[in-house]
Structure formats: structure tokens, C-alpha cells
Length: 272
Image (cartoon, rainbow, N blue to C red; front, side, top):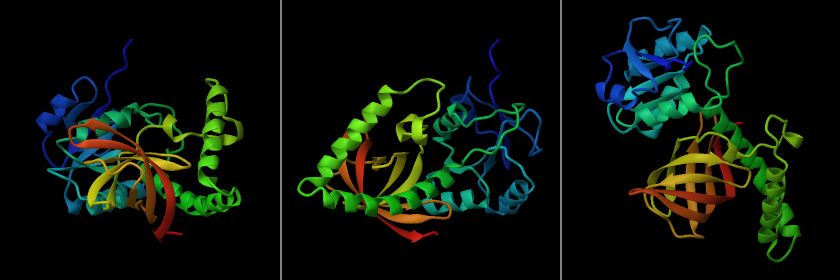
């Protein structure tokens, strides 16, 4: 028997018909006046700042339903951060929201209505915060080891990291716990977290995956391979400026490039 499609209620305005059509067969959208409905798996809210008090009350009262704001156009990073801080899962551009919502329901943290209760999953913003703090601590320690390795120390260290990763992949076993708690970023769902690129040219980008040595970032135009990429990353409670070395790049669409970037330095600008 096929499981029913998740049901999202749309509040603060009508159901956007184009979004309903894009999500047909994956997510059912319907209008309603109740924030919490037993058969509701998530909430979409037309973006109005006067809804922030209701969001906070819902979260403070223990509400765990996914809540997404719907903006009529391009979403500024500052606005997205504000909505997340106020209790929403994210603020989405209604014209491109379908892909983000599909990724949500296909992620390993998705739990539809009626599922057994569990601890709330780690939010995307909290994951970014933890990564920034860990990177800030890790990179200086890595640099000390690289310096001790002498000439070509970084290349030698990264060769070892690559070989170790191959060993971990060879030892993977479905359903078995990871030895020493190892988890690779590539095994997890994309982040789709907005960032601001400062160098080589200022533009908006997206953090799409994170790992111990660096990150995957989407940008509208390719930088020079081997060149410096400086990015500002804003989490919910932590922010930082990171320098990366571009190691690989590939074209994902007409105006979107995916980069593999080695983290070189991290400076926390806000946080613990």
C-alpha cells in the first residue's frame, strides 16, 4: 500500500497554484485556519513580519511541525536568518520552493504526522553553527601538523585523509554503527544554506555540503581553480568568514557551478 503524500497547510493567504502544481504527487497543499492539525505534516506561511509572535509562541509551546515562510521573490540572507531565529525552518522564494520542500520530505530527518515521537532532529541552522565552531578549532590544529610534516606538508596530509576515507568507505556496512563515530558529509542531505561570497567577486552562493576538510559551495560563476574563495557564513547563533582553496568545479546548470573547496582558515565573527 502506497503511503499518502505529506499534507502541508498554507496560512496567511491562498495556496499558490503554481507551487501546488509543482508539488503534485509529492506534497498536498491545502488552505486551513488551524496551525496544528492531526493530519498536517507541515505549515507554509505567507511571509509577513507580524507573524513572528505566533511563530515564537508555537515553538515555545513545544510545537515541532516544520514551518516554512513563503516570500514572493528572491530572499535576502538577512531575512532568511531572521525567520529561522524566530522559529521557522526556513524562508523560501515561492517560485523555487518546491525543490526545497521535496528535499525536506526525502531527508533522513523527516518524520510525517502520526509517526512515533522522537527527539527533534538537529536543525540545519544548528548544524551550520556546530560546523563553524568545529572548523574554527580544527584548522589551527591541522596547520600545526602540516607544518611538522615539512615540505609539501599539506599535500601529504590530504593524501593521508583521502586514503583514510577510502578505508572507511571499504568498511561501510549497512545498518552497522560507524567506527569511532565517523560520519561523512557526502552521506547526508544537501544543506542549501545561503552564504555571501566576498572573493574573488561578491555574489550570493549556497553551502550545499560540509565535511572535515572543506565544503561544497554553489556559485553563479566559476572562480579560478586553485584560487582563493572567501565566504561569509551566517548560522543562527554563530557566524564566520572562511577562506577556501578551490579544488574542483563543475557546471550544474546555465548559471550555477558546484565547487569543492578546501578550508584554509576560519575566523568567527559571532558566537561562542
